[in-house]
Length: 180
Image (cartoon, rainbow, N blue to C red):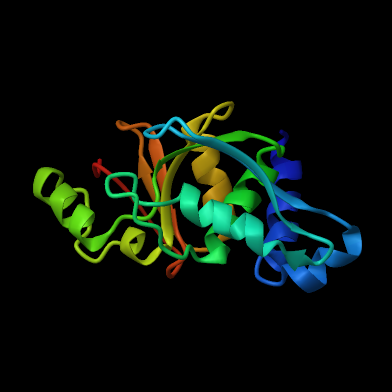
């Protein structure tokens, strides 16, 4: 995608991400996510928003898909996270397969992971259903990072050595791990 087209899409999408029912309803667009969970081997291809509204049955499927795969505990996922994922996908051309590495984590799972990895935050957004670690099947990690940063929709953690990107629905901020 050309830089100019990318910037144009970034500006357009940034204006509609948090008002999907008004801004996108008139276009007749539907919002689809194609996901593959690398730890469970599950995949889902879902239209979670169409005709100006969320499809709550599909959101329930997504909540289950984003569960803590260590314990199978399901937790409500912030719908803004799905919007964020959809926005990144759209900026990268749409209909991409998104690999999920880690989504919801129970506080207990998060604490166990913290003991073995200093990159795991004590009060992680993962424990609130507001974060996901991803990579795209057909996009370079640096391109996914640029798309996420262009949206200014939340946190963006860049983990190039581990080949994943963390996004969350917290205050817009960014970091790289490990630091240069």
